[in-house]
Every structure is written in C-alpha cells, then in structure tokens.
Amino acid sequence: MNKPRLPVREPSGPAVLAAVVAASVLASCAGMSGGAYEASATGDSSAAAIAAQRKKDSPPPARPVDPPAADVASSGFLFPSPPPPAYRGWILVRGLPVGATLYVDGRSYAGGSAEVDAGERFVEARAFGYEAWSARTVVGVGAQVELEAWMPPAAFRLTGLEAAPASFDPGAPGSLGRTRFEWSVSAPGRADLEIRGPDGRTVLSVRDLDLDSAFGSHTWDGRDESRRASPPGTYYARLTAAGEDGGASSLETVVEVTPEADPQRFSSLHGGFSGALFAPDARILPEGSFQASVGTYLLATPRGADSAARMPAFAGVRVGGLFGGKSELVASGMLVPYFGYSGADPSWGSVTVSVKTALAGGPRGAAAFLASASVASFLDEASSGFPPSWDGPARYPGLDAGIVLEASTRTSRVFGSLHAHASTYYPGWEDGPQATPGLFAWAYGRAGAEALLPGVLGGDLALALSAAVRTEPFGGTPGFRPPLSVGAEAHWYAPDSGLVVSAYAAGEWAAFSSWYYAGGLGVGFAF
Image 1 (tube, helix red, strand yellow):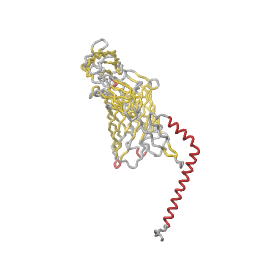
Image 2 (cartoon, rainbow, N blue to C red):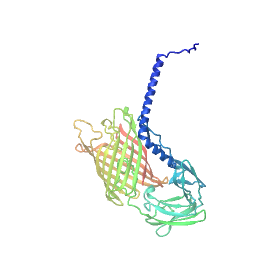
Image 3 (spheres, rainbow, N blue to C red):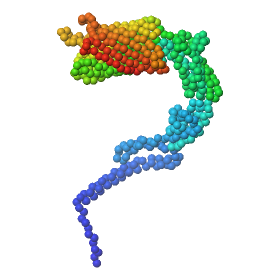
Image 4 (tube, rainbow, N blue to C red):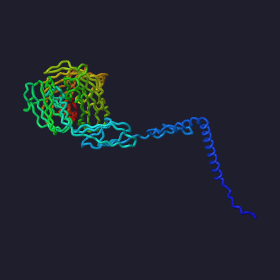
C-alpha cells in the first residue's frame, strides 16, 4: 500500500537567490572567524593560560581596575572604550554651628556635606565666634563618611591692628587721602578707637564699634573732631575691645600724616595721556600707583541732510613709577561707531600710547616731557568735517612730543602743554592748487584748570575745564586753524574705595553750521 505523499512546493527564483546569498555570507563569516580563532589559539594559547593562572592566584583589587583604552576587533578596526567611572564618595559633618564653613583639602563647601574623590582627606570647619575644628578621614568609593564636629565658643582675642597705608596725605581726594585701621577678632564684642597726636592729645575718638565679624576696619581721613585737617606728624591709634564673654584686649599702631607737594589726582585717560580731557598734567604717578578708566559720551552735529550722531567709547590705563620712578606709561583706546552718516566710510578705532617723564617738580609747580604714538580714527577725508576737526576727542596717526607745565596749590592747579604732531593725515586739508604733502606736521596748544572740592556727597569732587587749538601745517601759511575745542569734566572720588565716577562734556565751534556738543559718563579706579 502506497503511503500518501505530501505535496512539495517548488522554490521560487527569488527564494533560491536569497538562500544562496545567505549561505555565502555565513560561510564567509565562519571562515574568517575560524581563521582568526585558529591564529589566536596557535599564537596566544600559552599566554592566555599564564594570564588565567595569575588571575586565579591574585587577590581581588582594592578598587575596580580602569578598562583598557581601546579594544581591537577581529576585523582590525579600533573601537574607543567608554571613559572610566569617577571614584567618589561623600563626607557629612554633624554638629556645625550656624554660619560655619566646611573645608575639604582647603576647598570650601556650602552646608555640612561634600562630595569628594575617594581616598584620604583633611576636613576642617571654621565659624566666627567658635574654635576651629579639623580631622582626617578616608573616603571609600561610593561610601559616605559621617563625622561629628566639636566647636566650642572661642575666647575673645583681638589681633593684628594695622594702618593701611601706614603713611598718607589727607589732602589727596577720595581713598587716596585716607588710611584704614584694620584688625581681626575671634569672637563678637565691642570696641573704642582713639587717635592721639604727636603731643599725646586725643585727635579723634570713635566709640562703640560693633565687632560682628572676624575682620573689622575703620577709615580715617586725617581730620579731628572739629573736621580740621591734622598737621603733619606721627599719630598713635589705640583699639580697646571687650568680648561678649567678658574678655578684654587692646592694641596700638602708628600712622604718619605726610602731606605731599601735590596730591595724586585721577585722570580720564581719554586722550591717551594723563590729564584733563584735552590738556595733560605735568605730575608723575608715584611708584606702585595705578589708574584705569572707561567712559562714553553721545555726540551730535548739524550737517543738513547728513545730520547724525555717534557715541565715542574709550578705555585707558595709567601706571606710575617707571624708569626709576621718574616716568609713567599711559595706554588708551577709543571706538567711535557712526550712526546715520551718508557718503562717509571712516575707520573708527584708535590706540594711543604715551610716556611722560618728569623734568622738574616742587610744591608749586612741575614740568614734564611727553611723547606719544597713535594709530587713530577719522582718517577719511569725506568725514573730516564730521565734526570739523575733532581736535579734542580725536587722536590722529603718527608721533607726538612736547613739554607739559603745571602750577598748583593743595586744592587747585593750572596746566598746559605745547607739542608738535607729525602725521600722514591733517583734518580739513583740501586738495587745491598746492599738492598734498606726504607728511603733515603741526603744533598743538592745550591748557586746563582744576579745582578740588572736599566733602561733596561724602567724597571729594574735582572740576576741570580745558581748551585746545592747532596751527596750520608747518611750511604753509602760518596761523591757527579753527575751530577752538573746549571741554569740561567732573570726577567724584568715593571715600572708602578707589572708585571714581566721572562726567564729561566737550564741544567745538567753527561756524554756525559747523559745531558739535558731546556729553557722557565714565567710571575709573585709582590706587
């Protein structure tokens, strides 16, 4: 009896093709894997056995071993391994007083806990009014170490009374004319400060100072109880303090009141040299002194259809005491974006560096030599009349040198300069029947005056006026080329810091249709 046969389905063409391709791929992979395995087994079997035995005999590592930097697949491609994990743990300190700061290996942490690298760590905590606490501990990977701090109240101690600076001139403006008595204390309390003159009499007495932090200070402007300036001499300051725990302590230090021939002044540094907006002063900053200033002002000019505005912005630094204390260096930069001008494409960035060296000095006057080099703006002839010449705010490319003079008292001074400038550009030069020279040279005359008003808004206020004129280029028609440039500035010196807040105004006049006015603000620091 014949068994029934199941129907057999003939494979289709696509199925046969897919089977053939799959079989070929599998055979190729098997061949490659087999060949690679055979080569590995033949060449590395002994090494693998030794490594396995070492791994069996060795104790487990104290911490996970970093994975290898890369794995090499049998195909020969390099595959980067993932970065190793961070081995970190936590430290929790209990018992810290309110306001305490936690430190681990010198790094501060907020609150009473810190996440740190595993290993041995030095832990400490400090708080005003309490004894410091410290401990060493070992942090495991992923573990948290809990510590208990013991910080009993600190005994009252007063330390480190000093005057900074130890010598000062009360006639200098702002913080330049003040000294600061500084001290440190271990716990809360109250104190009295007494300043005595060279004859032993009390000049100033400050009562009931609150000692509520680890460091304290009080500023003295060199004046007595009646707000009179103290004469030159050695003064003695005594701080007598008592703590809330009943402890008491007192310290004494000395300070010298030494009026200078001419107190240090702040400069806007606008023009690349130290001084008022237009006219440089003749004084040299002493060694160790430093000034910096930034500012901007809005300027507008009526030019018919082209009437528009721009906002010059400047920044500068001034360093004193160079070359044996006889010179100072000033570097200043200015940017002037133009808004709304048609037909003009001026370059609008400038940098000026100047060196001023003292020639003479005394209580009533000074003289200095000033030299500068500039890479300047407003070089496009099409914009040379916007405004007419920019003799005040502008710096033209080239070199400049001249003499600066000054006469002064303790609260006022007048200063001026006469210097020559050489440049490839001269504002307002017109190509007419005469050829344009390759190099222009002309002279500048500048002058200014300044008055110092003490006690304005808690600080000191300096007011200055200045003016500038220029000649025709040398070799041509002698005389002055309009316009006359005028400027004004005010500097307010903060009493307890080196901060100086400034206000500026400037203008030029050539004709009814050729003038400008500008005004703005600035901020600086003097140390």
